[in-house]
Image (cartoon, rainbow, N blue to C red; front, side):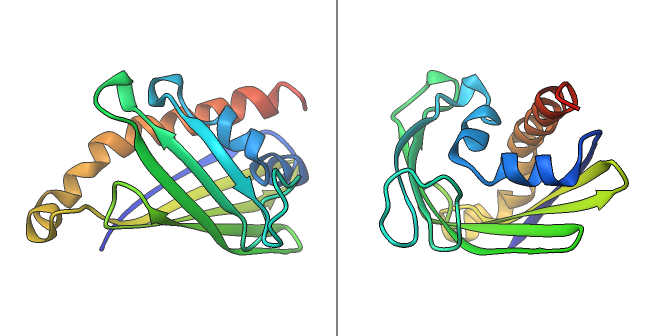
Length: 162
């Protein structure tokens, strides 16, 4: 499986950054317009619709249409882990249905004084077996603008509140 990682330092308190990333609103705010994201359904681990916090067991059904080209792509993610201990926390979502053969995204957060370090780590495999594995390392071309946008937008939204 291939891996993509990117980190950013945000001049905002750990608690604010963690709380922001724990919600459906955070996901929507951090997805670039060119992805044409549509959230179709969000369920908590107990089946509750539109939970306040995306806890372990939450399922997000969405679709994207990058650059408005081609058909919409279904994307179903499940939060499979969520833990907070002292000044660090993480949550992990796994794509259970969508365009990748495999997708596991770990979002990690570390307090550093009045700032927070965010680290995104994605383990992925493209579809099409051997062909997907051969071109897998090139997927960074698509990931880099997306995560650069997410990190820049996080800073814009949370640093202005501090």
